[in-house]
Image (cartoon, rainbow, N blue to C red; front, side, top):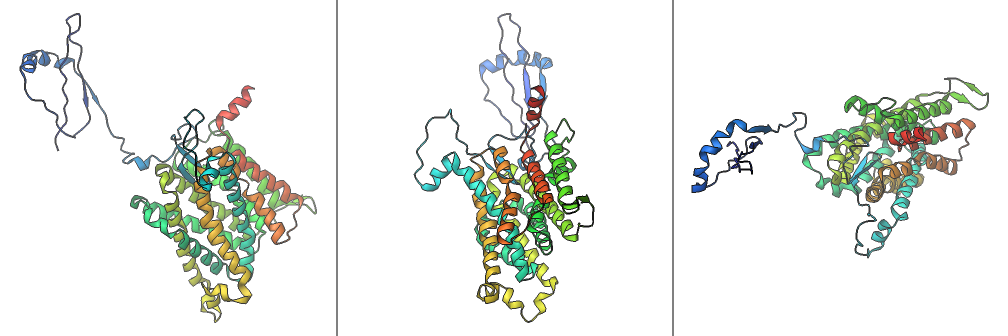
Length: 427
């Protein structure tokens, strides 16, 4: 490989002294040469005399950063311009600037909605509402069929709906997306198992503990400072979440006492759900910050991997050896009279709240700021509780209201920035 050397002929100043030549060396690339001329030959001796004054500046590649895609972590102050992230999804921002010139008027209904102020925010709120239906409908599916069959059918339908995006995946992200899909599957599988004997509202509230999982991973993997002054919003969110979970799980509103007797295995699975989804959000955001145009292809891989692992779960769950196993398979599920309610719940959670919802979320996310999106999407546990009360006629105690409120407040706290706390202290 040839070495690149670019030599510039020094010019004389008014004092007759030639300034030092600044020589930039950028590593082995190519050689630049100029045809000889009489003027260059006359200056050869002068240029040679100035060699001793040459300052060499060498640029070196950081060995830990061998590709642009490896620059994947940014905090609130180093977030790259033009990227909006929330709930483990990053997209290219498309927020209108008030100072820009008037742009072409949108023609389609969709463009008009997205270009309005309320449109994208209403879409994100709708996505949060749809996410909230997953828990009550998951309990309904588990009552009618094995959890592995219900989760596998849901994931297969979502994978089919998102399959066109698989072919748009950057091959360099294949392994990372597949690994991320394994943690996504962990979240869905443990969520389904937790819903067998745990209240859907409780599963949703405990699942909001992702506000603890993601900062811990950022500290352990990305070495992000996690001191009280560095990330006060994280400590506030963690405190609210822990107190909220404690009230939700340990406080007995009937006796007014605290105890661990009410904690069951379903509660542990609900927390493991937060670990699975939290790790998935962390890994997804790392990939998408480097490739924000890969949001839907990465989602398609995650859902497909979840479908595969859920089908493997079905093989080990035992129900496939029974004589009635075929009724739980697709599309037989929709033709079995006793499974009609569960079948439509599978279709809803697979096609609407998993596949379509991610498309809506990705489309609307680029039109708002990350802080706004995080706050809007943090309302999911509230809607999960409302749907549980409506569809399953669940009764809530004082511990549910207090604990749930604190957990949702913890989700809101994650949208704050350290500068917000500095401003409050100064006031």
